[in-house]
Image 1 (cartoon, rainbow, N blue to C red):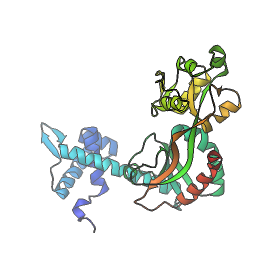
Image 2 (tube, rainbow, N blue to C red):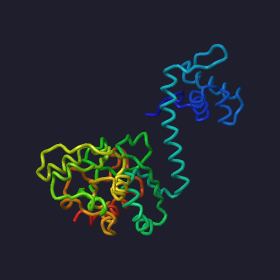
Image 3 (tube, rainbow, N blue to C red):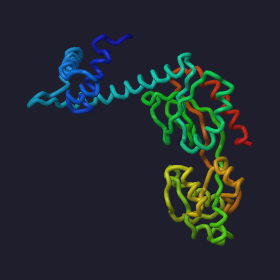
Image 4 (cartoon, helix red, strand yellow):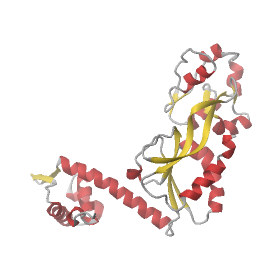
Length: 299
């Protein structure tokens, strides 16, 4: 059932109100919106009249938004961001062939990006819009159509399609290996172990896999695998890296195995999208292509 018209004010009223709350004055909002100060004041008053709520406390020549008005402005800001993103996608692909995808930074830059020309060549006219996200988010607020997710099939309200299970391998630079004798677990425990912020227990699980119950020491912490890998290449310490990401650096000799082969971990990579709304036009084709492209990583 449609909302009463008074709960759907025009975008001009909402934009003026949001700008006043965010900038702190009608003068600053007028400058931003390229309107006169009087026009902005009238738009705000018209909005108050339409919703039947006083949004500002007035006195001493100042407007102070009420707590309710601040919350209203936050909601409007999210809604306008979604409208803006939708308009941008429409402009980029007027035929409807646009897909907004949230990607994990290192996976996106080092694995997905080099393979995208193949997908785009197979599907001319499709536009992919990419943004990096490290953790699950609310699809309704973000405007993204889908996301690459690492972990379990536990993204709230999302449909999951599995891409591959992950394996990790302990690596270091040849120079680091030459400077440190590594013949067993005890040697590893005495060396700097590079950590990933989002996976604080990964080294402990790796040692447990090798039947070493001791808690490994904490080392330098990084927020992305790309920087962990570069630190290992430059001899800062030992890195526990996904085998598929480290493959090129191992192949060209920048990194070498420090101890043992790649081992499986609990997490997997997934393509996820909101279950509550229909898939955008390019998503089924992209999902099929991505699953096929990941086939070598499942072997």
